[in-house]
Length: 292
Image 1 (cartoon, rainbow, N blue to C red):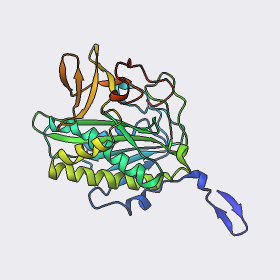
Image 2 (cartoon, helix red, strand yellow):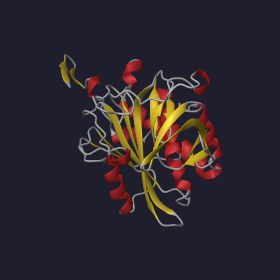
Image 3 (cartoon, helix red, strand yellow):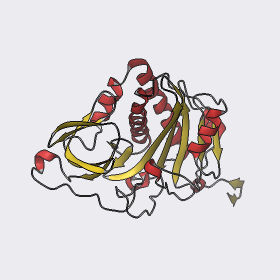
């Protein structure tokens, strides 16, 4: 806030997120309530706590800063206060746990929709949960759920988007990037509205129409399809050519011993060009630098 002849005015640099204003722009599929905090350990943890207490589907929990943010496999998610959009959305999908493996794919497609709507970017997706812009990681997704063998009780979709700056993170799988690399950073509130609304649309389509539509859209933005990759699986690694996703969101890889279908794993190496252009070339590791 700074003084002017007319009084006081909020600086745009503060990039405020006002829960009531955000909630008024949401719908029809996910519409809050919206909780926004200056600082929290983890938005996913808070959303899960509220889920166990009976919070409704559509709850949005966000923060300007996380002190214990995390990504997949226990990695830390690092961002300076207000540099990133840090938010978790509570869902109660009417699916069996075996089908819930598609949720990170649904979320990734929704994030790509939202980024393209508010910034001059062409997002690409890396199985299972990374979003790249111009080869740099701008977003990570962490989905967590609770349920039994027959149904999912609740699921939390956690999203971190580097908006105004990329973090300085050593030994990362992808070089870091932010939306500001492509032009003026969009207001976090606008991105939040676009994200929740896009997630609502993709989530509704998945629960009503099945996996095929979202898998098809993922394929249009797939950064790995046709490339030689290395995937960390359990205690070992698998090398082969990425063939896209199957109907459950699992990664298909043409390995030396045949086509393998992976429900879990992590891509640790990728050829610089599609396999047809680099036949016989070794698959290396991504350069260090960012993207958790």
